Length: 73
Image (tube, rainbow, N blue to C red; front, side, top):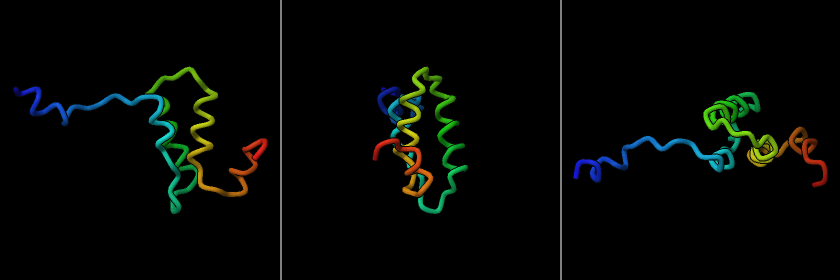
């Protein structure tokens, strides 16, 4: 009964799809967004660099810099 009552307070480890949930806020700098992304990426210890790049680019706010990262818009 104790486990059932407090199971919602349990810490859930991050999953790779959590990278896609990170979005850059309008008032957040690219550096702040990148730092937050890197912290989560390090905790995940994923080996799929391509997935990380795609998740980061998708989470960026639209700007000339983010447009330059996309090869074929």
